[in-house]
Image 1 (cartoon, rainbow, N blue to C red):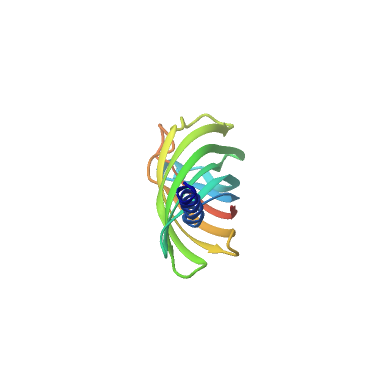
Image 2: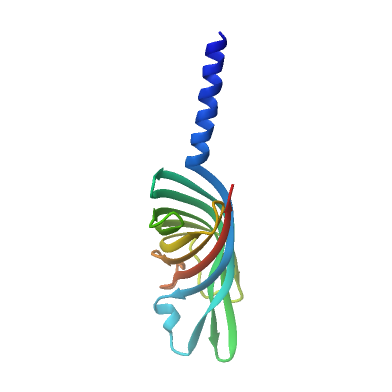
Amino acid sequence: MKKVFLAIVLFIATSASIQAQLLKIGVKAGVNFANQTGDATDAPGISKEGITSYHAGLVAEVKLLDRFAIQPELLYSTQGASYKEAGQEFKNELGYLTIPVMAKFYLSDSFSLEVGPQASFLLSEKDNFNIYDNETFEFGVNAGLGFKLTENFFIQGRYGLGLTEASKNADVKNSTIQLSAGFLF
């Protein structure tokens, strides 16, 4: 009986050790440099500028091979643009729950190339003009680079491009550059 108990304890301890090496959960936050692209943003008499906003949320890293991991994330991210027409400025800021799933290819122990899809669900709209009726779902792709400063701290740079329309009434897609810092437990 003691041997069975000892075997179970060793199995659980080994499983926990392997699990800790294969799965890490953490948090990340950073700055967004967001803009919108499309025909509606190029209308005559209207000038467009990007906005600076933020993103924050949870991140996990599932190590599948020595140099390959999957990184699902659950983030709150604000995107949009600022429009000027006849001296008036209109800011269109959209708050999304974004779910990127990144494939991470480690080029070294610390440096990674990241690419993957992203689903975004609209949670809030801060627009002081109601020209566009914003879509509640957006699909896009991301690509970027990551660097582990230590075993737990990391930084990332990423470009996200919306593939579906952000508005029901206009040809507008979100485009975002993200700079992030995070911590894996």
